[in-house]
Image 1 (cartoon, rainbow, N blue to C red):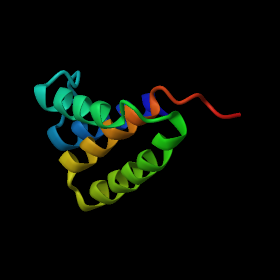
Image 2: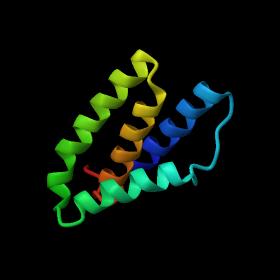
Image 3: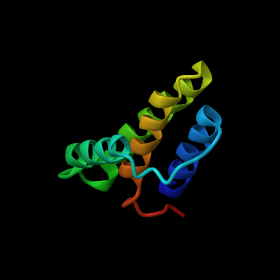
Image 4: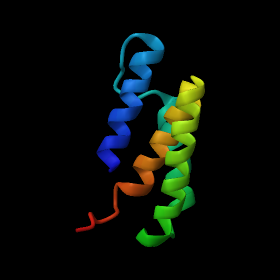
Length: 88
């Protein structure tokens, strides 16, 4: 799930700019740090609902062509799901 979110972010950047970068910009780092700080004292299960909501925002923003908002949402999904154990 978390790796998929990074892939999606990269692909959106490719659509928007015609190329994908390594997501090492200060903007991406800032988004990741902000989400990580908000989720720092949250149990895995409590991260799933915000991750779902971010996924819905990602889809909506992408459909509108708002790639910046969609990338932010994808990074949020990544941060919230990277430590969640796979189900199944």
